[in-house]
Amino acid sequence: MQTDTPKVDCAPAWTEAGTHAMSPLATHDEIARFNFLANLNKYMANVVVGGNKVAYDSRAKQAFRNTHGHEPQGRREIRAAMSVDPYYQMWSALRRNAMEMRQQAGRSMVLRQAEPLRDRARSLNAGAKNLQLHPNTPVPRYQSAIDNHCMPGSYYAEYLADDVSAAANYDAGMFATTTGLFGRYLDGAGRGIVEWLARRRPGWQPARILDLGCGVGHNTVPIAKAFPQSRVVAVDLAAPMLRYGHARARGMDIENIEFRQANVESLADADSAYDLIVSTMFFHETSSRALRNVLQEAARLLAPGGLHLHLEQTPYHAMEPFEQFLRDWDCYYNNEPFWTTVHDTQMLDVMRQCGFAADALFEDEIHAVVDLQMPKVGAEVEDFGRGGMWYAFGAERAA
Ligand SMILES: C[S@@+](CC[C@H](N)C(=O)[O-])C[C@H]1O[C@@H](n2cnc3c(N)ncnc32)[C@H](O)[C@@H]1O
Image (cartoon, rainbow, N blue to C red; front, side, top):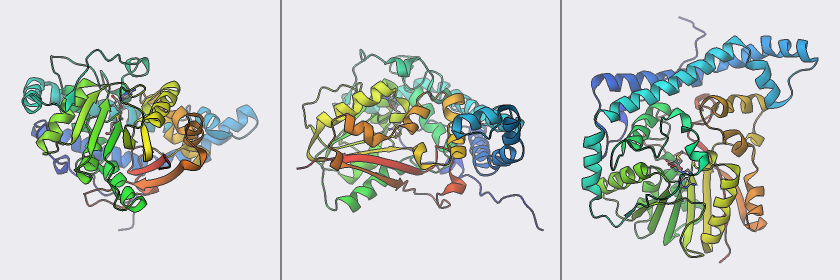
């Protein structure tokens, strides 16, 4: 039978996600909820989204022209035209609800087992020199004032002593949110970095590696595995992420990562302390001032001959205004207040202002390396910011 409905493969089942020593236990209904959400996300990203352009071309553009006497110019005017259109409102409400449901699904699952999870982390972390918590580290306002991507309490909230529930929720729900595009262990970006490094600097063994805003170490682990002789320092503000991340890595027999609580705007390490400095999905959650502070600090910390490599979503200057408008959704409706500014920023200009030599800078594209049978990443499976395709920027310091 002939049909006009676009073909969409199912999202991988939640049970295909990789398990590890800290994985929360899930009931039948909890798994079913995640599977529903993953497929809802995938359907929205592949099918429902397309109706926005139809609504714009056939209705919203003309309505804007009737009022303003000209067609929408640029992302902001497209947003003004579309934010009153019922199709965009429906798509937007679906996305927001899907995110709230995802947080609810993850939190209800991990909060009912918060104590056993905490105890498991305690036992895996006992006496570990590689877990350096500094509870007096202030949480900067750009983190404390919002619940990032509708995650109640964001990354750092603690509900009991030595809590790991925020991290367990982040870990458990991300496979559904990203519909498998980051791989079974959510480490596609880190694996992509390893593959990129092997091409850019074949045989290079950076002795000291720094990961900025490491979270639970999803992308730190593949880098630590690729360079087993290296000392990796993974820094984050949030103690729950670090406790969970250290226990998770230990359960995988990874012993060369130090998980350290600190603000990466200012670190205690000596000048030139690291050969390789990386970040993944980090800068879009920092303020403009923090972005500059971090890059200045990172410039100070890079050793001669060293390399910076940072992965973010694709910047807006490489996109058509309508796509910019669609991607900007996260800023307005998903508690990502820095999303627009970071994606509008010419990162290489900022790096230059932060002390990097102009001829040392580079940009590139890095595809997530994914250990699942997935359709090829491209426009048709990009989830407007959560796809497995990364904009890479960085610098090489002369030896
Ligand atoms: C979106 S998560 C990304 C985690 C990780 N890089 C990954 O790829 O899975 C951003 C992380 O940055 C951390 N973060 C935000 N601002 C920070 C800062 N100033 N210093 C250290 N960590 C920070 C947050 O706590 C959070 O864990």
